[in-house]
Amino acid sequence: MWIVAGFLFLVVLFAVVFTIDDRSFSMYESPLLGYVVLEGGVPVRTEKLDANLVREIRAGKEPNILVVLQDDASTLSSNEGIREKAIERVQQGVLSSLEKNKLAVEEEGIADESTAVEVEEKFDTVNAIALTVHDPVALVRLTQDARVKKILWDYPVTITLSDSV
Image (cartoon, rainbow, N blue to C red; front, side, top):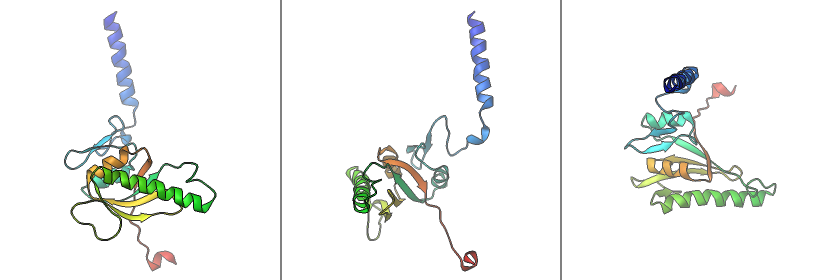
């Protein structure tokens, strides 16, 4: 009886494995594991990360990112003044939590070797921050922050005159 149960278990296991779409797996992320290992062996959960961002990081780049933050009643307010103040409060809270973890945040000026995160843009009407992350630990902290909804790669965009005509 145990042999039959073990055999059925193996059949079901193989059926599940062979029905999973192979294209969903890559060397950059795994839906089974949910982690990517950065330089220095730092593991980062991928559930909040854009797949293209993971590829850029694995390629050894320090990409610009867009950190989309969780909305609440204040950040979705129809009153522009209330909404802007609420968005600023959430943005500053996320940046302050990085600083509390001993990660240097540069909001204005020139970043140096000790800078973990460089703020490129704080948006007024959208609950998001554009950052450049120089330290993988800062990216880990961002993925662990409950106020962070999603971290997207800020794709480089170039516009030429021939594209506009």
